[in-house]
Image (cartoon, rainbow, N blue to C red; front, side, top):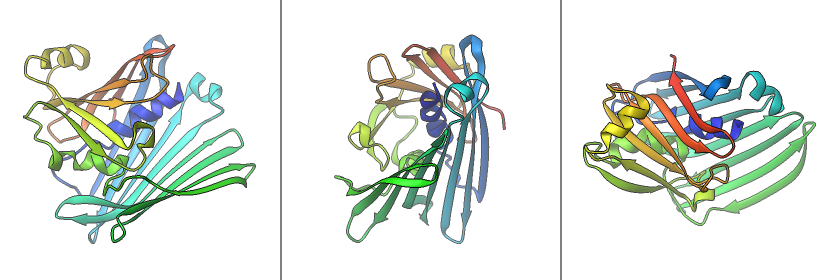
Length: 247
């Protein structure tokens, strides 16, 4: 269940804003069916002196917290701002549960057009695994900056199926897919997510946790460019998971 929360929250909290603010903060409650709230995510974007930092903290709550071994996950993206676009230089993912920690660090080298990855595992604060590799592709985006930059990559008024490369999407061959629905498809989004959103979209997630290995994250985005509500349907063994912005 927590993997679902993390996939969901990581995407919705980093969805694009057309106006890049000096600081942006958002909090989402994640719920599942009759179980109610099962997790929360907190994201902050800071932009100062031509540089940015995004941090996202995710955690389970209630029964999901106990079943996951008090699992927590934190994503940090740091880099520069060029003409209003976030350009990644370092992306870090830290996952902890029980007495274990998994850490991934991506370092971007724009001159060599390479992304270097370090993967480490810890138990009782002692490192027992260390791997270094180079991603088979290059992108200026990680999973967080990609969604902040979407407004520059696509026209939200033009329906289509888009594909982008991003560090952190290795399980998907390096690609992230985004669908902007047609006018005739909008009614289905309004039925699932409610009316009144400025625009709607779907992000496709390839993970084994979905019944057909492909999850579709539906998003309702407000006029401020921030996702107000999101929904993942048909999660294996669980059904639908939703997230609502509370701050």
